[in-house]
Image 1 (cartoon, rainbow, N blue to C red):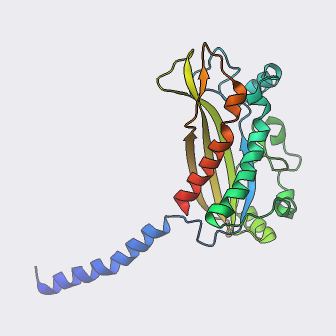
Image 2 (image 1 turned 90 degrees about the horizontal axis):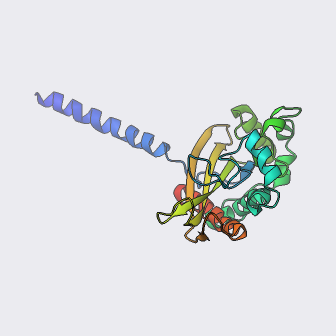
Length: 250
């Protein structure tokens, strides 16, 4: 190989290297890159707390959320704390996000009133049939949606002053620990949080999922356990989910 050819190849390599490095860096989203303030466009959760399993157990009303299972839950689960506190978990999740994001990441969260008063947000889903078939518990005032188009995202950012827009979707379950079985086990509280974020230009910049299982457990014997005790484990799980998200992207 001639000296001229070797020099030409080296020049080409060093010319391409910065482009490769820039390309790799740009794929990593960061909460510190002009992300503040963040506007919450939706928070939702499931209606009951099923077991982490692909099968429906004899001692629960349904495997996952759905129109039929929600109807059954509302009828048979009137005295079940896990079902009765579904909205409380969603409300806590919203409050926790508004509290933890500024405390840990220094990222401001847009007041809820600013989002609700956004003309674009207010007009989304008016007279929509989705409100009748939605199977999730929604935070008070939030629309029946888990995503948004880029144009509406840009308009809402402009109207609220937000640099980022976020949707938070939670699924809460019971997790059988320590090789337990369907009758006797230590049950952990399991939380799954899906995060979807847009930037102020309406570009989807982040879509990720986080899972946490509580270190604490509730004892189950012959399928019986303290449901109030189980419910009390979820606030800590929610806090851990939000912190896990922040740590990954800060």
